[in-house]
Image (cartoon, rainbow, N blue to C red):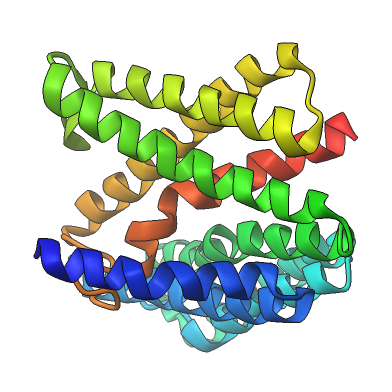
Length: 273
């Protein structure tokens, strides 16, 4: 298992870094493909669950990929317009497909909400990463912001793991993720804040007084992203989101924290710049 995890990481890390940093086009392609895979994994978990969900995967995957396209053309307005139009279209399609609405059952609403939520959850944050890459194209700032999101996610997870493993005593969310501890979360926050201070000082010129709240905020977001996917898998009674990455599970298992961090980084850029 450990060997498979290491080999997967050695293969995927260069691919991800090249895709994100080579050009805005490769960033859009990488994030678009990842959005489709993540959305598909979410739908698959829902279908395999005991709730008998019946989402509409093809329209959902199209919406997920469209976020990266909108990010490439720097059209954040189109992202949110697409969500509204998609929700309306899926509502109409689901009404004609799902007779349970007329019977007053909850299946219609559940299937509709799931169809809309999955691509927004998996695709919108990746579209925002594409937006950052395109918006700052030609400037080192683009690389630094994306690197910040990646390293905070990785650092918080690594710090939480090692601190929790050695010093963890108090469970953070035992019903959702029994292995996570309060001590581990605090260790992740410390590492995440140090990473923000380092990258913020080296490449982004973020004032020192911003690094602590930003580091804490991003790390908490990373933890919440992980807990959310763990909660979803428990609700669906699924161990992993998929089997795409040997030793790691599905793609969502690897990027659940990053999805939240990406949104928070983009919000900080909008407020700070």
